[in-house]
Image: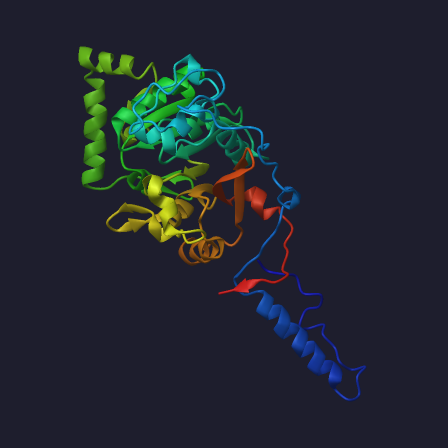
Length: 360
């Protein structure tokens, strides 16, 4: 971030100092300001971060067998659904009792609804209507539903390599009454989809990729009764390959797998982007770089609570040249749950705080 100089080099003067000390001082000032222009991690604390989270009263005890106080015990085997996830089911989806469907991974990986709604509100803040948002790792649809519920969003692109999980996401979207035109489901690899965009514009395919997409479109035109059956299975929502991608993209939400429930074994504040392995040659840092190039920098990255913030800032600058970042800690019931990295317009509007910068 370039800081404005109080005086330009041309206007700097030392004629009032006969001994030349002013010249030395002016030179020192410019050197100091030049040093401040170097890449740095600037720590800006929101007022809410100064408040102590309110803990659970001592007299409140956890009930056994996943009972959250309503008397309904965990009906699943513990190896499939842990008691704590069953007890928190309505924090994951407030409309859980209306028919929400989750798989084993979804129970511990879906974003709690309160946090998902908050992230969605942050990403669309100050934006015009008609936003197109890519949920690159949609899973069972928690974040996608939160985005689709925002009036500023016209379309959510849900991507996942697991078609069964996309079916669950579509079912959950139906529970929340998401209109079919506001959400599409892409059965493909997130990296393949992200690479199709550059600065928010869909790039044309070349060679084999183009042939595959043309073939897929041709197959859809020759629909059969089986195709109609497939449409019924996704509750009226469109599901296919990259032929459903829109011409533009405004924002990307990244929530890649963290490594299962064992991610905390890495240690407190030791989690790095390199711990996220998308494929053999793509890790979390490569993913951030691709997303920044695809959307021009407007993105959010959902990360575990033990992420190392300083190294994350270094990685973000080194890989994606993102200079304005915000790390937000997400609390639920006085417990730190997750961390969200924002690189957006709303971050650029934050005042700069240069005290105690960490240079790298």
